[in-house]
Amino acid sequence: MQICELKNKKTTFKDIIYKYRHAWVLSYGILYIAWFAYLEQTVTTKFHIITMPVDLKIPFCEYFIIPYLLWFAYIAFGVVYFFFCQKEDYYKICAFLFTGMTVFLIVSTVYPNGHYLRPLEFDHENVCTQLVGWLYRTDTPTNLFPSIHVYNSLGVHIALTHSECFQNKKLCRLASLILCVSIILSTMFLKQHSVFDVLTAFGLAAVMYYVVYRQAYKKVLLLLRVGKPEKSPVLHDLRL
Image 1 (cartoon, rainbow, N blue to C red):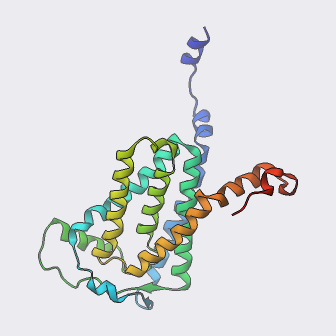
Image 2 (cartoon, rainbow, N blue to C red):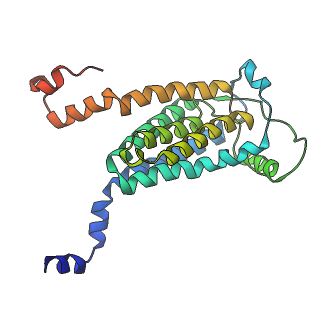
Protein backbone atom coordinates (compact mmCIF):
# COMPACT_ATOMS: atom_id res chain seq x y z
CA MET A 1 0.00 0.00 0.00
CA GLN A 2 2.77 2.43 0.90
CA ILE A 3 4.69 1.61 -2.28
CA CYS A 4 1.64 2.40 -4.40
CA GLU A 5 1.18 5.69 -2.59
CA LEU A 6 4.81 6.67 -3.23
CA LYS A 7 4.47 5.88 -6.92
CA ASN A 8 1.32 7.91 -7.22
CA LYS A 9 2.74 10.89 -5.36
CA LYS A 10 3.19 13.80 -7.75
CA THR A 11 6.31 15.91 -7.70
CA THR A 12 5.30 19.53 -7.48
CA PHE A 13 7.19 22.56 -8.78
CA LYS A 14 7.82 23.52 -5.16
CA ASP A 15 9.45 20.14 -4.53
CA ILE A 16 11.78 20.65 -7.50
CA ILE A 17 12.73 24.15 -6.32
CA TYR A 18 13.50 22.82 -2.85
CA LYS A 19 15.47 19.83 -4.15
CA TYR A 20 17.67 21.99 -6.37
CA ARG A 21 17.83 25.06 -4.16
CA HIS A 22 21.63 24.86 -4.32
CA ALA A 23 21.36 26.29 -7.84
CA TRP A 24 21.58 29.77 -6.30
CA VAL A 25 25.37 29.40 -6.31
CA LEU A 26 25.37 29.52 -10.10
CA SER A 27 24.06 33.08 -10.00
CA TYR A 28 27.74 34.00 -9.61
CA GLY A 29 27.95 33.55 -13.37
CA ILE A 30 25.98 36.75 -13.89
CA LEU A 31 28.52 38.75 -11.90
CA TYR A 32 31.45 37.10 -13.66
CA ILE A 33 30.14 37.63 -17.19
CA ALA A 34 29.26 41.27 -16.54
CA TRP A 35 32.63 42.03 -14.92
CA PHE A 36 34.62 40.18 -17.59
CA ALA A 37 32.70 41.91 -20.39
CA TYR A 38 33.53 45.26 -18.81
CA LEU A 39 37.24 44.38 -18.71
CA GLU A 40 37.22 43.21 -22.32
CA GLN A 41 35.76 46.56 -23.42
CA THR A 42 38.00 48.78 -21.30
CA VAL A 43 41.36 46.97 -21.35
CA THR A 44 42.28 47.31 -25.04
CA THR A 45 45.47 49.33 -25.60
CA LYS A 46 46.88 50.44 -22.26
CA PHE A 47 48.07 47.36 -20.39
CA HIS A 48 51.17 45.68 -18.96
CA ILE A 49 52.75 43.21 -21.38
CA ILE A 50 52.99 39.71 -19.92
CA THR A 51 55.54 37.47 -21.66
CA MET A 52 58.44 35.16 -20.90
CA PRO A 53 61.40 34.21 -23.15
CA VAL A 54 60.12 30.63 -23.38
CA ASP A 55 56.94 31.88 -25.05
CA LEU A 56 58.87 32.64 -28.22
CA LYS A 57 60.16 29.06 -28.40
CA ILE A 58 56.68 27.51 -28.32
CA PRO A 59 55.41 27.06 -31.89
CA PHE A 60 51.89 27.93 -32.96
CA CYS A 61 49.72 24.88 -33.64
CA GLU A 62 46.14 25.43 -34.76
CA TYR A 63 45.05 21.86 -33.99
CA PHE A 64 45.04 22.68 -30.30
CA ILE A 65 41.86 24.66 -30.94
CA ILE A 66 39.99 21.37 -30.47
CA PRO A 67 40.86 20.81 -26.78
CA TYR A 68 40.71 24.56 -26.21
CA LEU A 69 37.05 24.66 -27.26
CA LEU A 70 36.29 21.39 -25.45
CA TRP A 71 37.10 23.31 -22.28
CA PHE A 72 33.58 24.75 -22.23
CA ALA A 73 31.97 21.30 -22.25
CA TYR A 74 34.52 20.01 -19.73
CA ILE A 75 33.75 22.72 -17.18
CA ALA A 76 30.00 22.46 -17.76
CA PHE A 77 30.12 18.69 -17.27
CA GLY A 78 31.97 19.00 -13.96
CA VAL A 79 29.55 21.50 -12.47
CA VAL A 80 26.33 19.96 -13.86
CA TYR A 81 27.28 16.40 -12.92
CA PHE A 82 27.92 17.23 -9.29
CA PHE A 83 24.90 19.53 -9.21
CA PHE A 84 22.63 16.54 -9.81
CA CYS A 85 24.68 13.70 -8.33
CA GLN A 86 26.72 14.89 -5.34
CA LYS A 87 25.84 18.12 -3.58
CA GLU A 88 28.94 18.29 -1.34
CA ASP A 89 31.27 17.88 -4.33
CA TYR A 90 29.18 20.48 -6.14
CA TYR A 91 29.80 23.04 -3.41
CA LYS A 92 33.50 22.19 -3.43
CA ILE A 93 33.97 22.58 -7.16
CA CYS A 94 31.99 25.83 -7.14
CA ALA A 95 34.08 27.17 -4.25
CA PHE A 96 37.25 26.24 -6.13
CA LEU A 97 36.22 27.65 -9.51
CA PHE A 98 34.44 30.78 -8.41
CA THR A 99 37.09 31.88 -5.92
CA GLY A 100 39.81 31.59 -8.54
CA MET A 101 37.68 33.38 -11.13
CA THR A 102 37.13 36.23 -8.69
CA VAL A 103 40.86 36.50 -8.05
CA PHE A 104 41.38 36.65 -11.81
CA LEU A 105 38.86 39.49 -12.16
CA ILE A 106 40.46 41.47 -9.36
CA VAL A 107 43.97 41.02 -10.80
CA SER A 108 42.80 42.07 -14.26
CA THR A 109 41.09 45.13 -12.80
CA VAL A 110 43.97 46.46 -10.72
CA TYR A 111 46.72 45.30 -13.10
CA PRO A 112 45.52 45.44 -16.74
CA ASN A 113 47.59 43.01 -18.77
CA GLY A 114 47.98 41.50 -22.22
CA HIS A 115 50.44 40.21 -24.81
CA TYR A 116 51.43 40.36 -28.48
CA LEU A 117 52.18 36.67 -29.01
CA ARG A 118 49.48 35.92 -31.57
CA PRO A 119 50.65 35.33 -35.16
CA LEU A 120 49.71 38.11 -37.58
CA GLU A 121 48.81 35.56 -40.26
CA PHE A 122 48.59 31.79 -40.67
CA ASP A 123 50.95 29.80 -42.89
CA HIS A 124 48.04 27.82 -44.30
CA GLU A 125 44.27 27.68 -44.02
CA ASN A 126 42.05 24.90 -42.77
CA VAL A 127 39.09 24.41 -40.48
CA CYS A 128 41.25 24.76 -37.39
CA THR A 129 42.86 28.03 -38.48
CA GLN A 130 39.40 29.36 -39.28
CA LEU A 131 38.29 28.49 -35.76
CA VAL A 132 41.40 30.14 -34.33
CA GLY A 133 40.67 33.24 -36.40
CA TRP A 134 37.16 33.32 -34.97
CA LEU A 135 38.61 32.94 -31.47
CA TYR A 136 41.04 35.81 -32.00
CA ARG A 137 38.22 38.05 -33.21
CA THR A 138 35.96 37.30 -30.25
CA ASP A 139 38.54 37.12 -27.45
CA THR A 140 41.07 39.91 -27.03
CA PRO A 141 44.68 39.08 -25.97
CA THR A 142 44.14 40.88 -22.66
CA ASN A 143 43.12 39.94 -19.10
CA LEU A 144 45.36 36.90 -19.09
CA PHE A 145 46.60 35.80 -15.69
CA PRO A 146 46.03 33.60 -13.97
CA SER A 147 44.70 31.68 -16.96
CA ILE A 148 41.10 30.69 -16.27
CA HIS A 149 41.30 28.02 -18.96
CA VAL A 150 44.14 26.39 -17.04
CA TYR A 151 42.82 27.06 -13.55
CA ASN A 152 39.30 25.77 -14.17
CA SER A 153 40.60 22.70 -15.99
CA LEU A 154 42.70 21.84 -12.95
CA GLY A 155 39.68 22.50 -10.75
CA VAL A 156 37.44 20.07 -12.62
CA HIS A 157 40.08 17.35 -12.76
CA ILE A 158 40.79 17.70 -9.05
CA ALA A 159 37.06 17.55 -8.30
CA LEU A 160 36.64 14.36 -10.33
CA THR A 161 39.64 12.61 -8.81
CA HIS A 162 38.57 13.50 -5.26
CA SER A 163 34.94 12.48 -5.64
CA GLU A 164 33.71 9.08 -4.51
CA CYS A 165 31.57 9.04 -7.65
CA PHE A 166 34.70 8.47 -9.77
CA GLN A 167 36.82 6.35 -7.43
CA ASN A 168 36.13 3.17 -9.41
CA LYS A 169 36.04 4.81 -12.84
CA LYS A 170 39.67 4.73 -13.93
CA LEU A 171 38.89 5.39 -17.59
CA CYS A 172 36.93 8.51 -16.71
CA ARG A 173 39.76 9.83 -14.54
CA LEU A 174 42.30 9.05 -17.27
CA ALA A 175 40.17 10.78 -19.92
CA SER A 176 39.84 13.78 -17.61
CA LEU A 177 43.61 13.92 -17.13
CA ILE A 178 44.30 13.73 -20.86
CA LEU A 179 41.77 16.45 -21.64
CA CYS A 180 43.01 18.64 -18.78
CA VAL A 181 46.63 18.43 -19.98
CA SER A 182 45.56 19.03 -23.60
CA ILE A 183 43.64 22.15 -22.62
CA ILE A 184 46.57 23.51 -20.64
CA LEU A 185 48.92 22.96 -23.60
CA SER A 186 46.40 24.51 -25.98
CA THR A 187 46.54 27.85 -24.18
CA MET A 188 50.24 28.15 -25.06
CA PHE A 189 50.28 26.54 -28.51
CA LEU A 190 47.40 28.75 -29.65
CA LYS A 191 49.23 31.80 -28.28
CA GLN A 192 46.29 32.61 -26.08
CA HIS A 193 48.40 32.71 -22.93
CA SER A 194 51.96 33.14 -21.83
CA VAL A 195 53.74 30.48 -19.79
CA PHE A 196 53.51 33.01 -16.96
CA ASP A 197 49.71 32.83 -17.08
CA VAL A 198 49.88 29.05 -16.84
CA LEU A 199 52.31 29.08 -13.91
CA THR A 200 50.22 31.58 -11.95
CA ALA A 201 47.15 29.44 -12.60
CA PHE A 202 48.95 26.42 -11.16
CA GLY A 203 50.02 28.47 -8.15
CA LEU A 204 46.50 29.66 -7.44
CA ALA A 205 45.14 26.15 -7.96
CA ALA A 206 47.63 24.78 -5.43
CA VAL A 207 46.43 27.27 -2.82
CA MET A 208 42.76 26.58 -3.51
CA TYR A 209 43.35 22.83 -3.54
CA TYR A 210 44.62 23.06 0.02
CA VAL A 211 41.76 25.32 1.09
CA VAL A 212 38.96 23.30 -0.51
CA TYR A 213 40.14 19.70 -0.50
CA ARG A 214 42.54 19.46 2.41
CA GLN A 215 42.43 20.24 6.12
CA ALA A 216 41.48 23.88 5.78
CA TYR A 217 38.09 22.97 4.29
CA LYS A 218 37.47 20.37 6.98
CA LYS A 219 38.26 22.89 9.68
CA VAL A 220 35.75 25.37 8.28
CA LEU A 221 33.06 22.68 8.25
CA LEU A 222 33.83 21.77 11.85
CA LEU A 223 33.71 25.39 12.91
CA LEU A 224 30.32 25.80 11.28
CA ARG A 225 28.94 22.63 12.84
CA VAL A 226 30.39 23.04 16.32
CA GLY A 227 29.69 26.74 16.73
CA LYS A 228 32.06 27.27 19.66
CA PRO A 229 35.43 25.74 18.77
CA GLU A 230 37.04 26.55 22.10
CA LYS A 231 34.72 24.08 23.83
CA SER A 232 35.11 21.32 21.28
CA PRO A 233 37.74 18.59 21.85
CA VAL A 234 37.42 17.69 18.16
CA LEU A 235 39.09 20.95 17.13
CA HIS A 236 41.80 20.85 19.76
CA ASP A 237 44.16 18.65 17.77
CA LEU A 238 43.18 19.92 14.33
CA ARG A 239 46.05 21.61 12.52
CA LEU A 240 46.30 23.19 9.06
